[in-house]
Structure formats: structure tokens, C-alpha cells
Length: 399
Image (cartoon, rainbow, N blue to C red; front, side, top):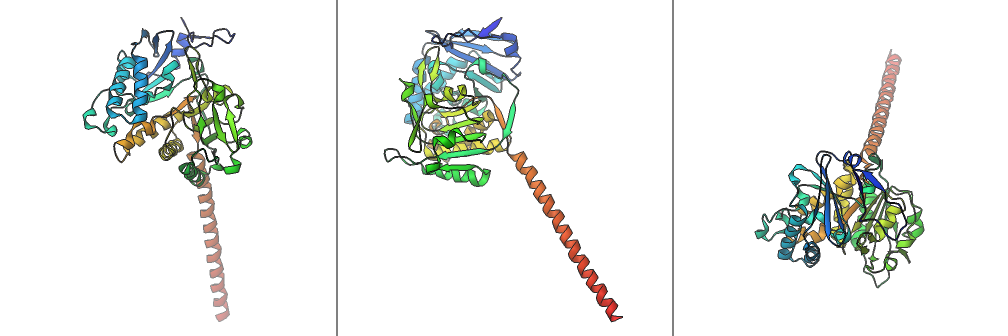
């Protein structure tokens, strides 16, 4: 039996269908992982794959309406509507799956499900009567959520790790766009604590972005996304706009687009969305992080700082983002601060990778500490020897 992305194939491209031997695909999955491929062919369907089994079924037709409802409820902070749609969507998507057997859920969403934040779904209505976002039974509290652009892109190479080298871009904007003060503070914090490079103001241009050698390129900016014509979408740099078709290859292993709705685009059944996410991945960046909606400057930068701290601790990109989201909920000072609006937008897609930050720093620390210790002992020895020689000289003179 072979598995292929028939419904996700772009019919406008004259390409031969790529097929995947099902057994080979299943070998990529661990015992505690489940891969769920959602697609639409007039109706919504779901293909479930574990390392030992497969299931296929059609989803309830209410799924699209509920997806629209949860999106509106998140953006409007409508607690009751969010609880209803969050619970309803979980039942539609996962009621036929025994999720307790799995720690990680890998989803390959398509069509309108591409803009659904799966982490925000509610496993139950437990504690919902408390009217407190912090107490809700979010899926992310108990499971790692991983996103896959397509099964064809899933784990085709061994897990990789790279040196932690980050460049943060914070351009200035025309008066028609609001300033992003917390993005500037974020850049300074990353520069101080993680030895990141800052490209601020005039330096935050496309030339420095495209020709940057850092393994992580983090952009804090504004973007305008046209869901009807991808070519009208753009991200602001210094006195210049980056359009979808103008994305160029670069050396970064992780691209972070912390701009409003950077993960959205023109959505077509079968083809997936056309936007910046696909553009960067198709240009060779293995991992890309985007936002599903217009984000809050302060809260989004707090979450991304937390994300990088978890990367520093050795967590992978997938685990670090999930951990950052759980932390945002746990540390929220009140109910509204724990709303999915503040933590549900960022999504990482592509290869799951690690960065060597702490290890390098620790080794450097040991080298410096060891060198300093040896130097102190040598100086102490020489000083002691000098004093001893002086005392001996005085002793002979007295004789």
C-alpha cells in the first residue's frame, strides 16, 4: 500500500504524483506519536497514521462553521463562544481517536484548517464554569503539537542541530504604521543575553536580511496579507516591502516572521495556502515560524523570548514553542492574559531542529574559568616565591 497527497496536489503544476510507501512512512513515527492528515475534496476527510495502524474517515460537515466561530471568538475575547467552539471542534477532529495513548500529535492541515490553532482546542469543558481562560482544558497542556506542511516533507532526514546564531530585525516604519516598542526591547534583550545581532532602523533592510549568515533570522515588523491575491501581500523592511515572490534563498535554518497574520495567505482547496510560509520553505529554509492573526506587540515578544530560552535549554523548535505556550498560560496574571489570543497565533512548520547554545556557552565558560584559575595559581606561586626569596636574602644579610 502506498500513500500520497492526492488532494494536496497542485493541479496547476504538471508534476508526477509523489507516492510514499506506507510502511516506510510509519517507521518514521514513534510509539507515542500520531500523524493526522486533514484534506478537503468537497468534503473534509481525515487520515490517521500510527506506526502500526491507519484509519480513514469523513469529518462532520459542521467543521468549517466551527472553525470560523473559534477564530472570531479568539479575536473578540468571547469566552463562552470560545468554549463552545473549542469543545465542538475537538469532538469533530479527535473523538474517534484515543489520544491518551500518544504524547505528540502531528497534524498536516489543509484548506480552512490551515488557520486553526490546534493547541487551543478543548479536550473537555472541565472548569469552564469558572470563566477563567487559565483553567481551561487546552490540548496543548497535555500534548506536543507539531505541524507538517505535507507528508512528503515529513522527517526526510535525520534530526539536526545547529549553532545558535540569531539576528533580529526591527525596522522603523512610516507614520501610517504603529511603532513596535516592545520589539525593540526584545532585540536588546536577545543581544545582551544571547549574543544576538541587532539590525535596527536603517540596517533592517532587505540586503542585510537576504545576505545574513545567522542560523536564525527573527523579524519583528508589520505585514499586510491579501487573502485573495498573494502577490499583494508584503512585509515591511526599511523603506522597502518584501513581496511573496521576492523571497530569496538564505542560510538561515529557522525563519521567524513575528508580523501580523504572516502565516495566512490565499487558501485553495487541494493546493494549500499561498503565502510567506510556503515561499520561505520552498526557497530552502527548513523551518519557518509565522503568526495566524494580528498579534499584541508586548505579549508576542514575551512569548518569543520564552521560546528562545527553551531552545537554550536544549529543547527542539517544536517542544520549545509548545513549552512557551504552556508557560504563557501558567504565568498569566489574570484570565484575559491567558486568552488564546495572546499565545495561540505562533506556529512553527518544517523540520524539527535543535540549536547548540548552552553547550557552546558552557564549554567557553569552562575554558575561560579554567584559564583564569591556572593564571591565578601561577601568579600566587610567583608572588609567594618572590616573598620567600626576599625573606631568605634578608636572613643571609643578618647573618
